[in-house]
Image (cartoon, rainbow, N blue to C red; front, side, top):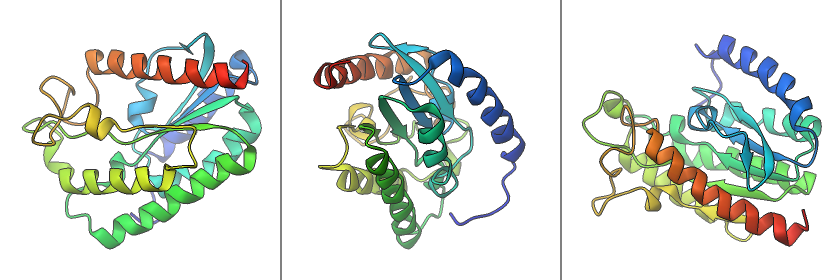
Length: 211
């Protein structure tokens, strides 16, 4: 997906304001959770005793998120970051060449974390749950292909990789029944599972950092 006007632009502006107001409450050294609507819908304000700054932007894709990351890192000064983006890049009729471009933007985001010396936990987009309202707008094959690229880019560079594409899928590669509300966005139960995974991963990483 290339640069283009977004119907979510006004929402992103509101999110910037909300994130800015929450930043002071979280303070430096917390967890920066950055990404798309799946992140925005994450409703815990602490992970492994660390405060969370939720920098989720509904509708955002990887290229649009990339320039926001260094600004967030500079202003929030997190001790640990979590990154989950890519769902909105894997739309129906997405080509492999388009996914290659997405991967290049994703690698740039990883370089931002490296430059800021902030360890990042990389999560792949979760799988699609078939036969629900938003299913036909997204490509399960593109989602899986992009997730493989994300794992390859993050391998050896991220502090940890959480492959939700594998963890949340059934034997056919689709999301397990009840994982989502609409085919894409996570159900309450799935969010609890996501939180539990992050709780363990962040706690382990924080221990290593001496936080």
